[in-house]
Length: 177
Image 1: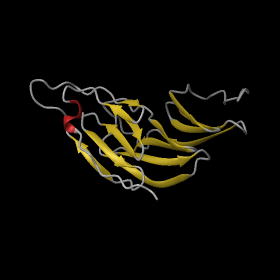
Image 2: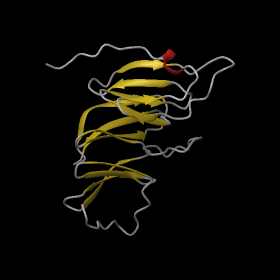
Image 3: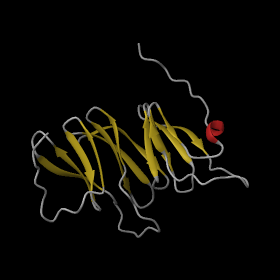
Image 4: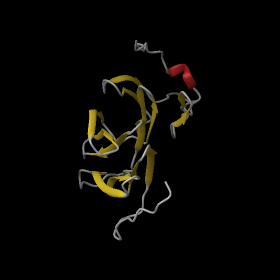
């Protein structure tokens, strides 16, 4: 795509953006937005915060590409975080994911979304059923190292920790026929 797409003059700066196909999902400090790169059109999707209540942390936008023409975006509701699956046209698909607190990071290892919560707990949700499949508690003990981030990698993810895979367990995955 080699064209300029004019944004509104009062449009805030994009803080996070992800692209799949002809759709670009980006977030400013107030809303998630979708840009159709073929039609050069822009529309708002969902507020980053659905509550005006102040939080002791900065609610940063989190966008994850799930597949061709599908995104996962997170919004703070005031009591929990809500993950909404949307198409490149902005239509909701699947169900929603919910977290008790707003994640610091999310990664996709299809069919799972892995999230790092502020208390350093890792939660793994199924994209297909939207159910929580595993919770990995934060490291404990004198040698515990803070989990600062999740890093996406080919066919997996990295959790910076001295305990490494000792806290992860295998989960059976059904194969499609």
